[in-house]
Length: 329
Image 1 (cartoon, rainbow, N blue to C red):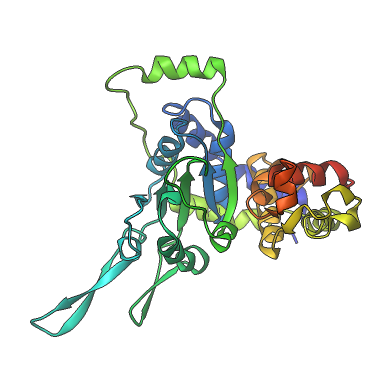
Image 2 (cartoon, rainbow, N blue to C red):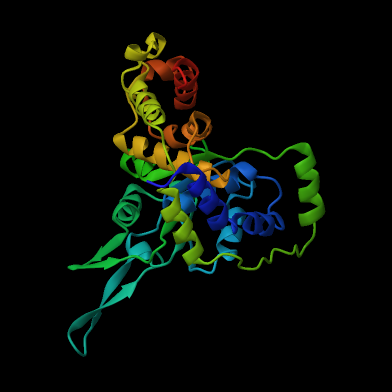
């Protein structure tokens, strides 16, 4: 294993594209540092990202701008109630002259996929995404096709209270590494938005500053970032506290959680903490890295009980209590 200072130096060298990428995005997107950092963590860990927020918060614009800053393929798919699985993965077309079927690939065969308003499509379409998100492959007829690398689904959704939306299946939610809650900009940021965008033809052009090779190099280095055994134990304790809260001094949460976070959450939390250390230019993970990204990894993986709903206790509140109660190594 490399020593930590050596990894830190390699992290600084491999992460030189991060600052130019952030500067390029900020030419179009005002503020939203939380959103951009979450998308970068997804890129660095090969993890899909779900963005939730009311319309008009630049979710789609940020993803499109990020894709334009990378020399890579990009497809935007607008999810609607009448969308079919074939509209995503493609289909087999019969040729009556030859009596053979030819394969027509769908828009999923690209690098960055923007699944816009993903919760407006029914369950059959959501299920079509599962194999692509987990296995990075698509099955058409009796043939399986590998998707290109990198392959990342960046999905946006409006809050579920809004009309015409469907609850995403739990299995699909678990495939998203992070769920980012996108909020309103500050007053100063909104004033900048006014200056930049209050025109009939805003300048939304950016130039590509990152190659897929640079991202893949950084991604392999993220895997080498050092995680101390005590931090690993802390991550496992955090996840187990969502399943067995009473064993961790969280008796108030007993009966509030229907299902805790899955083992996939343990893996995702470790990877996300490593990526956050990479973005900070460090070769090691601190407990603060785990705490700062914990809500994004866990909020969509915890199912609350009816009792919790009756007391207005959300999965967000449960995660906050877990981090507030567990001792930090």
